[in-house]
Amino acid sequence: MRLTYEQDVRGHSVVDAEGSVIGEVEQLYLDSDSFKLAGVRVKLRSEAADVLGVQHGLFHAGFLDVPAEAIQSLGQAVVLRTEARNLVRLT
Image (cartoon, rainbow, N blue to C red; front, side):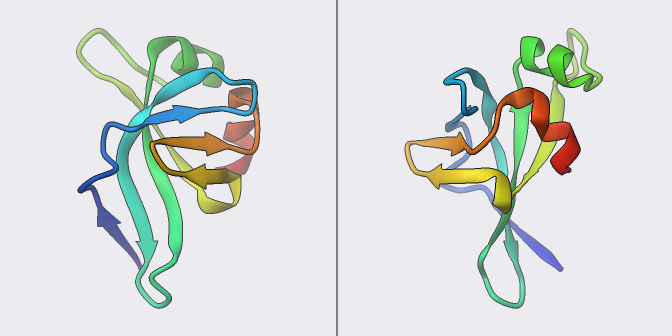
């Protein structure tokens, strides 16, 4: 079971391994048994959504759940271990 925690991390930039900002944190998921990070839900920028093939529109942002294994660090920004185009394979 996953718990969500939005306070203090919502809105932080998400940066891929190439240094591109692909979006911002929408939610943080915690594993309910261990309380360890399970992943983050990213509200994608339209350019990143296009690269990833995630549906989005003028009034509807694209979202992607990124597993903890793909996260290098979590701080003022979330830095990923991989390029944005590789994220679809991980989810």
